[in-house]
Image (cartoon, rainbow, N blue to C red):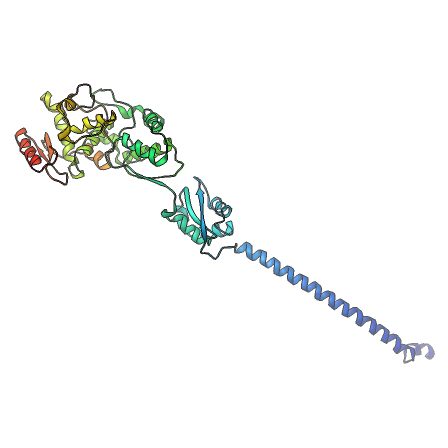
Amino acid sequence: MLDELDLFGDSPSRPRRHRRRRDSGSGRSAATLVVTVLILGVLMVGVWMGFGVVRDFLTPPDYPGPGKGEVTVEIKQGDFAGDIANELYRKGVVKSAGAFVDAAEADQRSRQLQPGRYKLKQEMPAKDALDALLDPKNRIVNRLTVPEGQSNAKVYRSLSEKLDIPIEDFEKLDKDPGGLGIDSSWFARSDKKKAPKTLEGFLYPSTYDLDPDTTAVEALQTMVDKFMAVAEEMDLRNVAQQKGITPYEAVIVASLGEAEVIPKDLPKVSRVVYNRLNHSDAWMNKLQFDSTTNYWLERQGEKRKDSSGLSRAELNDPKNPYSTHAHAGLPPGPIGNPSQEALAAAVNPANGKWLYFVAIDKDGSSAFAATLAEHERNVQTCKKRKLGC
């Protein structure tokens, strides 16, 4: 038993076996360590790369700026921030769509972005790109100003030049107001006279920024829509009817005032119109406005003239339906496009018994008179001051 137990005691061979196991284990440990280090290294690289992906996801790539070159981008009607971001990315304006979306979400002004074409730089910081889109100076537009009282003939010439569209396209649309939302009820007249159904009077005078590819229909629709918005704001239809006139007659009276006097005198000249139309003496029902003859001349392709340059034959031409010297009552339709101020004066004229008026000052101010004698004195003042009487 003791000899057998000695097999587990100290013996010459045991230490050798023990050393062999220790040497073999040391080699495997070293190899394991190397593998472990490699695995950890790979894992660390993977973690770092993953962090980079997450970092880029959480913070989309963005250009440092300030940008270079020039490119045209377009915001379409109904585009969301993502749509705009993709357009900017495709055109090389921003480094990533995500960067612009983040900039837009962080700035409430992004809700003010308007459809249109814009000139921007390439390689811009997303925030700078947003600022540029919000700056009206960067929008590519054809700016057109329609002055108060301007006739459709002049508006169409200006539009044709600005948009490079044949003037005939506008003239064709002029004859179809219903196609632009002006229904037949707008042309009703209390005097039962037949009204020419055109766009005259419905192209609201204002400044319009039109995109380069704006069509003739779109341009005129924009102006008509503006008129309708102003008319609704004023409640023009109801107010006119309460005054005993139709909305169309209000537009005609407004256009007459716009052509004859400066803004401060609009309420008075409206009163002159109504006083003459309602006068018991039939000859007073002729308004005798030179502006209506000038309008007719323009429609015939001729130049307008100063009042002193209009002949009696021209003023009293019975073949001219717009002559308020030859024909009693209001002309067939508006003779220009009136402003909101003129429309307001047409439905809210000043109180007075005036029947005449004439310009007496270089600033355009007029003198109003209730009698012919008083009016003739005002005419002499006009002539002395060489104001075209």
